[in-house]
Length: 615
Image 1: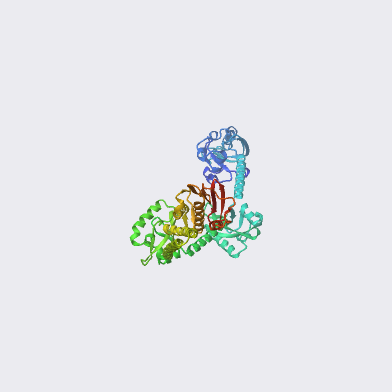
Image 2 (image 1 turned 45 degrees about the horizontal axis):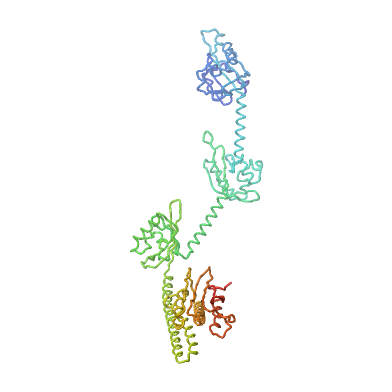
């Protein structure tokens, strides 16, 4: 409202100004003759930079000390002359804009008393009782407009920087404004959609059903209701994203709906994760339910929280019955108190393990029958506490198979014992027959029978070792050598009395497999027999040393005497002696090598690898 457009109000009473004080178009005040504020509207208070309450009862000079020297003379002139002053332009500082001048446009209108019969007509007309001030602080108004525009721009920048979709609608659903996010998502400008019915815009018009859903939401929001739902909208390239959409009524002072605010967040990623989670849960459930083993999850009270069909079938319950059980209901009655204590101790420090390790575990079916089980425990952490997942396997069949295997193993053990015992006895019989036969032969022939008898005894000794030690895969080489040496010495008592045989025990135990033991024993028999018979001819006595050592996977056996030595023209396998002819073949059976070393006596070195070829 322009100051110059104000009509002359000098004829009105002060009470007639009450309606004007509520205006928001111009600053208004009523001053008394002492230039004290009697009334002031909020707009003028804002213009002055002082609250309404701090105006009342104060003079212009007290409220506006810097501006008073300019305006007070003008106000006094109105009081003195009763003549209004209109459209004054005044410059000066006010509290509303500290440190800078404000440009004011003001009109000062006299307020006069009605005619009094005791006064002359001229005095009555000129009796001024106050001043009506009409003023506008143009500088502050411009500053407020600028601040308002900056605030609007800031709000716009903030809205445009958000990923949230925001739109302003009229109550009947016409799009008035929108921020940048939904426009860029759809590849359109504000001009493309502004002024259209919201449901006819690009985001929704791909589907009549979606449009109708939005139309209904606008109607409900126009009636004052906030509406929210998830919905897919069209974006660039005719693609779709899912948004969490909400439309909210904006109310005026009287509670009427002035605008509708539409907002949304892109929840495509969340929806994708939710879908993946649902699929993951379905996959887990399929795997969980299809697992052949029984699976059950219990809480800290032992109550069944989750179970699969295999668990229910194993124990003879329906799924609903199983969910009403505790884990102790699945244990034989006489073991339940102990199991409860074990479970509580385990739950104090739950770690993945088998609760029934090192002991027999039995379970109880619904009908009370018991059966053996194996149980693995896995603790799982959840927000509501620790849960324990138990994997239960019915091992009734395994127990039956195990019993059958144990029985078969015992039968096999007995059979092997009997075989080795019988072979050893049969070989001893053969040895005895050779001994009897040798007694009836000349000495030169009996010697050959004795050699054969010695070989038979070496074989019988191997079977005796296997029988006595109840081992059927290997025998200890040191003990075998020791007993074989004693046996050979007894067989050659006529010559071995002058010969000392010494065995150097190995640092690491050496074992011979069944395939190695026989050729090893025969080879040792031939070499020792040859040394006892020929190495000390013409000597009073001598010594034979046997050593055995194992380095990594190579076994080395050394047989050394301090006798007369073997002639240079004698080679293994190339003499008329049967023993020397057997030696290369026996070494081959060991898959090893033998070295003949001549010198101060004779030295044999035999190397072989257990279970493989010698490199």
